[in-house]
Image (cartoon, rainbow, N blue to C red; front, side, top):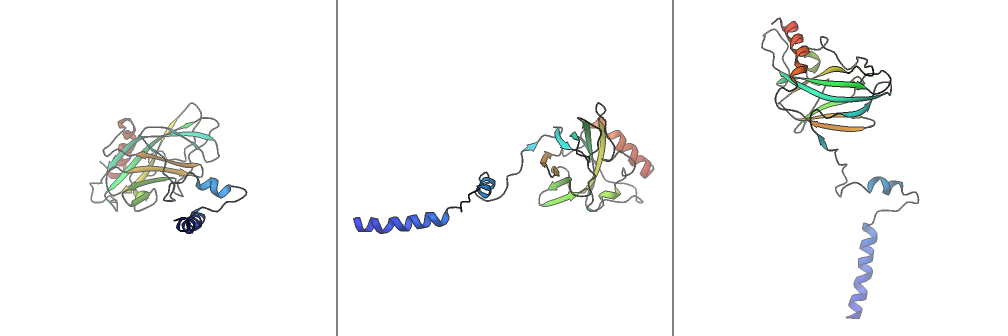
Amino acid sequence: MHYRTAAVLPAALLVTACLAPPTHASGGQNARTAHMPATGHLVAPKLLKFGQSVPVKGHKGQPLRITPVGVYYHRPMSESSIKPRNRYFLALAVRVTALGKPDHVPLPYGSQWRVKQGARTFTTSTSRANSAPWIGRAQYSGVTVHKGSPEVVYEAFDVAVKGGILEWSSPDGLHRWRIPKSNAGKATHEAVLDAIADYEGT
Protein backbone atom coordinates (compact mmCIF):
# COMPACT_ATOMS: atom_id res chain seq x y z
CA MET A 1 0.00 0.00 0.00
CA HIS A 2 2.84 2.38 0.78
CA TYR A 3 4.57 1.67 -2.54
CA ARG A 4 1.36 2.38 -4.50
CA THR A 5 0.87 5.76 -2.83
CA ALA A 6 4.48 6.77 -3.46
CA ALA A 7 4.09 6.04 -7.18
CA VAL A 8 0.91 8.14 -7.55
CA LEU A 9 2.15 11.30 -5.81
CA PRO A 10 4.96 12.20 -8.26
CA ALA A 11 2.57 11.73 -11.20
CA ALA A 12 0.05 14.08 -9.62
CA LEU A 13 2.73 16.68 -8.96
CA LEU A 14 3.89 16.45 -12.59
CA VAL A 15 0.36 17.07 -13.91
CA THR A 16 -0.08 20.05 -11.59
CA ALA A 17 3.21 21.56 -12.76
CA CYS A 18 2.21 21.20 -16.42
CA LEU A 19 -1.17 22.89 -15.89
CA ALA A 20 0.13 25.79 -13.83
CA PRO A 21 0.69 29.06 -15.80
CA PRO A 22 4.29 30.20 -16.18
CA THR A 23 5.49 32.71 -13.63
CA HIS A 24 7.41 35.82 -14.58
CA ALA A 25 9.50 37.97 -12.33
CA SER A 26 7.55 41.07 -13.35
CA GLY A 27 4.14 39.43 -12.86
CA GLY A 28 2.86 41.45 -15.83
CA GLN A 29 1.35 38.61 -17.85
CA ASN A 30 -0.27 36.99 -14.85
CA ALA A 31 -1.60 40.34 -13.68
CA ARG A 32 -3.31 40.90 -17.04
CA THR A 33 -4.95 37.47 -17.16
CA ALA A 34 -5.86 37.11 -13.51
CA HIS A 35 -9.25 38.73 -13.99
CA MET A 36 -10.14 36.84 -17.14
CA PRO A 37 -12.74 34.06 -16.85
CA ALA A 38 -11.78 30.42 -17.37
CA THR A 39 -12.73 30.63 -21.06
CA GLY A 40 -9.99 33.19 -21.67
CA HIS A 41 -12.42 35.76 -23.16
CA LEU A 42 -12.77 39.30 -21.86
CA VAL A 43 -16.05 40.02 -20.10
CA ALA A 44 -18.18 42.71 -21.80
CA PRO A 45 -19.11 45.71 -19.63
CA LYS A 46 -22.54 45.73 -18.07
CA LEU A 47 -25.51 46.65 -20.22
CA LEU A 48 -26.71 50.18 -19.47
CA LYS A 49 -30.27 51.42 -19.67
CA PHE A 50 -30.99 53.62 -22.65
CA GLY A 51 -30.68 57.20 -21.36
CA GLN A 52 -27.81 56.55 -18.96
CA SER A 53 -24.82 58.89 -19.36
CA VAL A 54 -21.14 57.96 -19.63
CA PRO A 55 -17.96 60.09 -19.66
CA VAL A 56 -15.82 60.03 -22.82
CA LYS A 57 -12.99 62.02 -24.33
CA GLY A 58 -13.71 64.40 -27.19
CA HIS A 59 -11.83 64.78 -30.45
CA LYS A 60 -9.26 67.06 -28.73
CA GLY A 61 -9.14 64.97 -25.57
CA GLN A 62 -11.48 67.17 -23.54
CA PRO A 63 -13.94 65.49 -21.14
CA LEU A 64 -17.47 65.05 -22.50
CA ARG A 65 -20.57 63.25 -21.32
CA ILE A 66 -22.68 61.41 -23.90
CA THR A 67 -26.24 60.23 -23.37
CA PRO A 68 -28.32 58.31 -25.94
CA VAL A 69 -31.71 60.05 -25.69
CA GLY A 70 -33.74 58.96 -28.70
CA VAL A 71 -34.23 56.45 -31.50
CA TYR A 72 -36.37 56.69 -34.60
CA TYR A 73 -36.95 53.88 -37.10
CA HIS A 74 -37.75 54.92 -40.66
CA ARG A 75 -38.82 53.03 -43.79
CA PRO A 76 -39.10 55.40 -46.78
CA MET A 77 -42.48 55.21 -48.49
CA SER A 78 -41.71 57.27 -51.58
CA GLU A 79 -40.71 55.23 -54.63
CA SER A 80 -38.03 57.79 -55.47
CA SER A 81 -36.42 57.66 -52.02
CA ILE A 82 -33.32 55.59 -51.33
CA LYS A 83 -34.31 52.50 -49.36
CA PRO A 84 -32.23 50.93 -46.59
CA ARG A 85 -30.35 47.86 -47.73
CA ASN A 86 -31.59 45.97 -44.68
CA ARG A 87 -35.00 47.01 -43.33
CA TYR A 88 -34.83 50.27 -41.37
CA PHE A 89 -32.90 53.49 -41.26
CA LEU A 90 -32.26 54.11 -37.56
CA ALA A 91 -31.69 57.63 -36.24
CA LEU A 92 -29.81 57.70 -32.96
CA ALA A 93 -30.06 60.94 -30.99
CA VAL A 94 -27.21 61.59 -28.56
CA ARG A 95 -27.01 64.46 -26.08
CA VAL A 96 -23.42 65.68 -25.72
CA THR A 97 -22.33 67.77 -22.73
CA ALA A 98 -18.95 69.46 -22.37
CA LEU A 99 -17.49 69.08 -18.89
CA GLY A 100 -14.55 71.41 -19.53
CA LYS A 101 -13.20 73.14 -22.62
CA PRO A 102 -15.18 73.07 -25.90
CA ASP A 103 -14.83 69.91 -27.96
CA HIS A 104 -16.85 67.54 -30.10
CA VAL A 105 -17.44 63.81 -30.27
CA PRO A 106 -14.86 62.09 -32.49
CA LEU A 107 -16.20 61.53 -35.99
CA PRO A 108 -17.23 57.89 -36.54
CA TYR A 109 -14.68 57.07 -39.22
CA GLY A 110 -13.66 54.03 -37.21
CA SER A 111 -16.28 52.15 -35.25
CA GLN A 112 -17.02 54.32 -32.25
CA TRP A 113 -20.75 53.66 -32.68
CA ARG A 114 -22.01 50.15 -33.42
CA VAL A 115 -25.39 48.45 -33.32
CA LYS A 116 -25.34 44.72 -32.65
CA GLN A 117 -28.35 42.58 -33.54
CA GLY A 118 -27.71 38.92 -32.93
CA ALA A 119 -24.61 37.89 -34.87
CA ARG A 120 -24.72 41.00 -37.09
CA THR A 121 -22.95 44.32 -36.47
CA PHE A 122 -23.88 47.63 -38.10
CA THR A 123 -21.85 50.84 -38.07
CA THR A 124 -22.54 54.36 -39.30
CA SER A 125 -20.88 53.48 -42.61
CA THR A 126 -22.20 49.97 -43.35
CA SER A 127 -24.96 49.22 -45.87
CA ARG A 128 -26.74 52.48 -46.81
CA ALA A 129 -26.44 54.29 -43.48
CA ASN A 130 -24.86 57.28 -45.24
CA SER A 131 -28.02 57.63 -47.36
CA ALA A 132 -30.43 58.13 -44.43
CA PRO A 133 -32.65 61.15 -45.23
CA TRP A 134 -31.45 63.23 -42.26
CA ILE A 135 -27.78 63.06 -43.30
CA GLY A 136 -26.67 66.65 -43.90
CA ARG A 137 -29.96 68.02 -42.57
CA ALA A 138 -29.64 67.34 -38.83
CA GLN A 139 -26.75 68.03 -36.45
CA TYR A 140 -24.01 65.43 -36.56
CA SER A 141 -21.20 64.56 -34.15
CA GLY A 142 -18.82 67.21 -35.51
CA VAL A 143 -20.75 70.01 -33.78
CA THR A 144 -18.61 71.76 -31.15
CA VAL A 145 -20.14 71.65 -27.67
CA HIS A 146 -19.52 74.34 -25.04
CA LYS A 147 -19.80 73.92 -21.29
CA GLY A 148 -23.28 74.75 -20.06
CA SER A 149 -24.81 74.33 -23.53
CA PRO A 150 -25.45 70.65 -24.39
CA GLU A 151 -26.16 69.69 -27.99
CA VAL A 152 -28.17 66.83 -29.48
CA VAL A 153 -26.46 65.17 -32.45
CA TYR A 154 -27.63 62.35 -34.70
CA GLU A 155 -26.02 59.20 -36.03
CA ALA A 156 -27.54 56.99 -38.72
CA PHE A 157 -27.62 53.22 -39.16
CA ASP A 158 -29.10 50.80 -41.69
CA VAL A 159 -30.36 47.92 -39.52
CA ALA A 160 -32.22 44.66 -40.01
CA VAL A 161 -34.67 44.73 -37.09
CA LYS A 162 -35.76 46.99 -34.26
CA GLY A 163 -33.83 46.90 -31.00
CA GLY A 164 -30.42 45.43 -30.32
CA ILE A 165 -27.35 46.62 -28.42
CA LEU A 166 -25.76 50.03 -28.96
CA GLU A 167 -22.02 50.21 -28.39
CA TRP A 168 -19.58 53.10 -28.08
CA SER A 169 -15.94 52.09 -28.28
CA SER A 170 -12.78 54.13 -27.90
CA PRO A 171 -9.20 53.61 -26.70
CA ASP A 172 -10.53 54.37 -23.21
CA GLY A 173 -13.09 51.59 -23.09
CA LEU A 174 -16.44 50.22 -24.23
CA HIS A 175 -19.98 51.21 -23.21
CA ARG A 176 -23.16 49.33 -24.09
CA TRP A 177 -26.88 50.22 -24.00
CA ARG A 178 -30.03 48.27 -24.84
CA ILE A 179 -31.85 49.98 -27.72
CA PRO A 180 -35.65 50.41 -27.45
CA LYS A 181 -37.62 48.36 -29.97
CA SER A 182 -39.96 51.25 -30.71
CA ASN A 183 -39.47 54.96 -31.34
CA ALA A 184 -38.31 56.61 -28.12
CA GLY A 185 -37.40 60.11 -27.00
CA LYS A 186 -40.17 62.07 -28.71
CA ALA A 187 -38.50 65.39 -27.94
CA THR A 188 -35.64 64.41 -30.24
CA HIS A 189 -37.80 63.36 -33.21
CA GLU A 190 -38.60 66.82 -34.54
CA ALA A 191 -35.25 67.42 -36.24
CA VAL A 192 -35.34 63.97 -37.86
CA LEU A 193 -38.96 64.30 -38.98
CA ASP A 194 -38.29 67.74 -40.47
CA ALA A 195 -35.27 66.35 -42.31
CA ILE A 196 -37.28 63.39 -43.67
CA ALA A 197 -40.07 65.71 -44.83
CA ASP A 198 -37.54 67.99 -46.50
CA TYR A 199 -35.82 65.10 -48.26
CA GLU A 200 -38.89 63.13 -49.28
CA GLY A 201 -41.08 66.15 -49.99
CA THR A 202 -43.86 65.12 -47.63
